[in-house]
Amino acid sequence: MRNTRKGTAIKQAAMSEVSRELGVENTALAKTIEEIMAKYFRDADEKSEARNNRLEKRLDNMHATLARHTDELKTLRSDTLQLQERVSQTEAHLQALVDKTTEMEDRARRDNLLIFNLKEGVEGSNMMSYLMENIPRWFPVFTAAHPPEIMRAHRLGPPRTAPAPGRGQRARPVILKLLRYTDRDVLLREARKKNPEVAGIQLTWAADYSETTSKRRKPCYKIMHEARIQGFTAFLMYPATIKLQRAVTASSSKSQSKGVLIAINRKLSYINLGSGEVTMAV
Image (tube, rainbow, N blue to C red; front, side):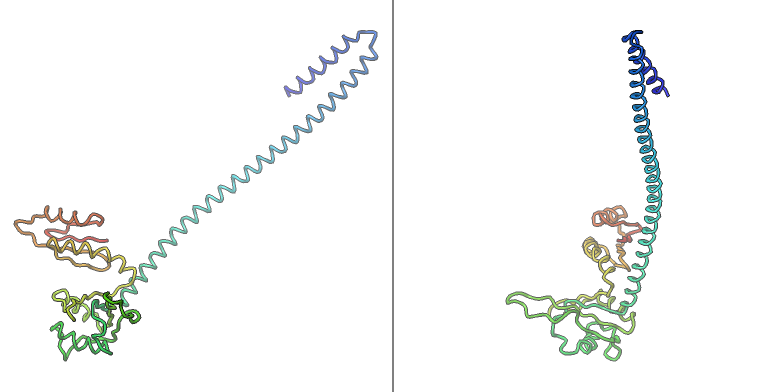
């Protein structure tokens, strides 16, 4: 409104200036010029008004577009938050299923036993007969009349090719499935007491677990080895929990034991369960 009034005042001042310059004797000419100027200003006003209307329309369209985009962004943000929540729930559900599947696989393997370092070929053509004959000799807790009942036994992996001259080759592990997991536990317990040797090589006995559980347990072995060197009795409980025990004597106080554990356990959490006993979960 202020611009319109200002424009009108300018036009009136311009036409009055023209009339003054021409004088009274040129009234007709002044009138003609005023009409021409009035038409010019009217056309200019119409063009300016049209241009302003176009600008206002464009601004209105821009505001409408911006408002629409704002609403769309709000909707997208809400959808994104919902999707993130659903993804988190799905990941948690998937992890629970993976854990359950791993546990089921471990349970399915609970009757299995692995034997490492058994020299290739000593079993002849029948691994099961070889083990049924030798296990009572290795572990007197079993007898020839009552050996552990083995359902099947074989080596893991394809047959090894002949090694290069001067180079040894590690024997393939042996896996056996027992009828009862209690026999497996007895074998593991007896192997911890005294591991037999075959062809001058000490055998290693281990329970069979899924790949996931095996990866979790692998870092524990180094910790257990260091703990045994420092006087602890180390146990690895399912799925990956280290239990260390050491009798507390006059020369080994609780604080000394704790210091040893911290030294060997920089990356594992530990809980002091009492005198000389600590459990660590990986």
